Image (cartoon, rainbow, N blue to C red):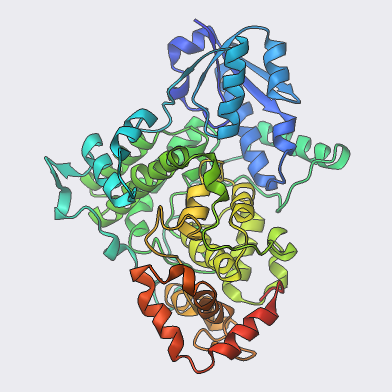
Length: 496
């Protein structure tokens, strides 16, 4: 058999079963890939730590090459390799070029996702719209998860209505057991030293702060993190999965997106373990269903829509948003921001490279949509600033879900809101200099004002969307709309 080249997001045992390990595995650290973009410092640490830990686990069966480019690594190896389907268009194009030269012997379907791409294409067929709810039901049935015959356990496919509770009144944290905390090893120390040296001596540019490793990078750590979540945190996850507290950055979230996207866990084993927690009495149905929906529903839906919509999808700009990302936003300069929610969330990205899905969507994405940031630039920002951001992850999440720049191919309406949403779902507004109920004046909430300015700016483009008819009509009842629009125009690129 031929040696298997595993990319840095293909590091779990399902990518290199025992038989293949006997033939050998190739792992590559490409300095060009690390430096091609301005990544978050902690993202580079996680990728390098995961690669080096995997090489150590595989021992003599693995060859770890540290080269400038992937092409140099293949030349240095001097023998053909097989690969699994890569997770980006760029990597896919590279291996197909090397397939023509004989350096890559074959490309096999990826075991990192539950549904092969060919089967998704069959499911998609001639559907005019690819709705996640339809895909999620299909997934539940084919994987036999939370179903009894053709019917969902509990009588409903989704318990989303029960999973939208605000944080407990007066609480500073959810008071759930903490998430699994990995212990750094000598490998992490070596990675940190290398990143310091490359930054100091070789011009490597990163963004964000360094810090202790917060996420699993080995199979053992990933399994421990999964077990910790399903037995101690999953029960609290569901009700408050959309809530935010400034003193509780992790809330009851799993923190499994990093090991999942490194390929250390398979989505099916994660979903099945969550279902087992329901049977064991460790978590209620609503919480389990909500988590399963994230893992084998939304995550896999995003993976497949990335390939289905094609490489040009990330350049869609249906609302004509063309504002450049301001420097304070691009550089994660949270200290320049007065708005409590945006400042705290931006600081979370700076300090950890991670915030959960609601700060991403309803604070960062909401702000970007209101200000008309260019969608492709915003996609790049999310991809490089987040430790779980990959080329396949962010275009559907940002262009489609967050910015509604794809003309509604993914979501039925834009995810924009005023300060009332943040006020209801968090504790940010209580100590903020801005009032979420005010839209004009020095203490007017920039999210509330920005919401109405967004609707006014995009009214013609959104007028055919029936879900936006009421808010679009509502803006005509604002006596101060003209003043509000001018106020937000004058704000320009300044941080709120």
